[in-house]
Length: 513
Image (tube, rainbow, N blue to C red; front, side):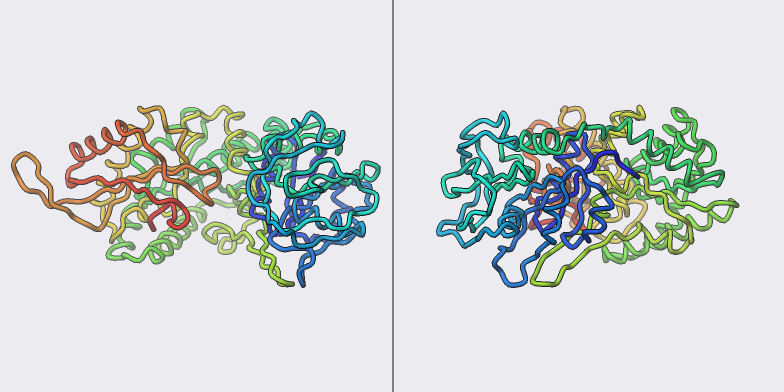
C-alpha cells in the first residue's frame, strides 16, 4: 500500500525500535522499520518525509559496528539519530565518540540550553531515559548543543540548516516525560507531516487495493475467530462481498461456546455465510495419548491443514487466501554482532499458502495489534469481541498439561469461563493482557462435605503486557480471585483446588506449554 506520508526507521538492533514506530503511528503518521542495511536506492525510491536512526547495543568505535551510507545525510530529508543513531550523526560530521567515565542508565534530567525546533514547548528539567556508556568528545562540524544532562554535556545536538538532529536518550519510551512531544516536533514541525494515517483512510485504501488485486475471483478465509482473522474477514467482505468464502474449523479445543458465538455474530450481524466444519472428533482422536507440547502443536497444525484443504476442494476459481498477519510478524528483527546480521523473517501460519498454491492477501501486514483493534472499532465490531485477550492457535490443548481427552477439555472450558466471567464482573478485564485457566497434571487431597476427595488442580494465570514480549503477573484484587476460586471448586466437578501463577515473563512464558 502506498502512503502519502512515511517516516523510515533504520534499525541498529535496539530493543525499543518497535516502540519508535508505535509512537509515530499513534500520532497518525505511517512509519516503517527496515534493517540498517536497507539500500540507499530503496530509501530514495521510498521518498520518506523523515528518517530515524535507532539505538543499538554497540558503540561506533567497536570493531565491526554497523554503519550507514553518509549519503543519507545529503538527501535533503530530515534525520533524527537516537542514542547509537546520535553516534552515527556525529561520526558522519567528523565528530568523535569515546567511552564515558560514568555510564548513564535510567532516569536523567534534560537541561535545555537553546531554542530548537526539536525541543519546542518541551519542559526544562523533564525526565529522560538514558541507556549509554559513551559521549561525544570531539563535536561534529556544523552542529550546536541544544540540551545536556547530568553526565551528557551533548545530550541533544542539531544542525537546523541541514535538518539533522541527535538525542542521547530514548524519546520513544514511556519513562521520557516529554518523549511524545519531541517525536511530534520531529514528524510535524521538522518533517512537515500532516497526520493522515487513520483507520478511516486505511479502510478506504485497503478496499481499493483488495478490489484491484482480487478482481472477480473468489477468496478463501480461514476464520479462527481470533481478533485478527475476524477483522480481516469483515474488511474483505466490505470490499468484495459474496466473493469471500469463510471457513471456520472447530477443533473442539476452543473456549466454551466460542465456535457457536463466532458463527452467530458473523451470520446475524454481518450476514456473512460461514462454512462451519465440526472436526472435534478428528482432532481429539489424533491427539489421543500425546503429552509432548510440540507434538500437540504439530498434530493440530497438520490436521487443520488437512481439514481446510478438504473444504477448499469444494470450491472452484479460488486464487487467493486471506491471512491476518500482523506487522510484528513481518518486521525483520536484527541482532548486530560484528558483521553478521541475523534476520528473523515471517513464516506463514500453518503452511497453508505453500501447500495450497494460493496468492496471499494480508491486509494487516503493516499494522500492530492495537491498530487492528482500531480498524475493528471503525467497522463497528462489538467491543467485547475486539478487546478480547489473545488465544493460542492450538487452543486449550496447550493449557492441558497432559494427554487430551474430551472430559479434560470440557472441565477446563467450564473453569476458564467461570474465571473470565468473574474478571469481567470485577470490571478488570481490560486491565489484563491475557487471562486463562490451566489444567495441571496433578491431583490433590481435599474435603467436600465430610468426604475426602482426590481431584484435579486448576492454575489461574493473568498478566499485564503491551506486546506479549515481556509480561508481569497481574496483581489481582483478592475478592475477585476468591470468588473465581470458590465458584470453580463449587461448580466444576472434578476440581478441588485452585492456585494462582505469580511468575513474570521472562523467565517464565505466558502460556505454560
